[in-house]
Image (cartoon, rainbow, N blue to C red):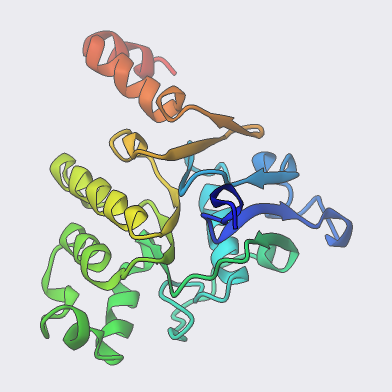
Length: 245
């Protein structure tokens, strides 16, 4: 087979089956960015969803994970715990185009349900398998994220992360970026919702900005990058401008 014909990603595109949606005027179908969604083509091994809070990034990420069979509150197909159902019905109306390549590992990480995920991991004795018998509850939130990615993620996997930078210092975010890069080299694909300009520097990545619509952008043209750049160049002016918003 020609090398160019060998699929590199596990999922190639995501779209909403609008002809099956019963009511487009209700949440989450009335979220501006999602209402504009036709088809997102995932061309890079790392895809970022960027944008302000409430623009639909996490909602879409969560729906992708559920549609692929992962637990809504985090984990893989083997995790069945549920503390509180908060996910939307968007997953029922997603069409995900998969390549011929299949992942040998998959995992969904939600920042807001990490505590519950770690508790479930302890019950499954993942702490013994991956973390030398030391529960991630005994680590800080940021340390837990890094340990999860560096020790649990095995490569040749599909990994979906919702704001994984939460709790991480700048150095920690660089360490996470390096782990993502390592796992991509081991044949993995990532879809990540983030506010981190550091993570947006990940090699071989692409970004989609969520606003009134979803648009493909250069990661360094994202809202996260431009706001940070303005702030670093002139903090006093940036503070003054934002205080008047």
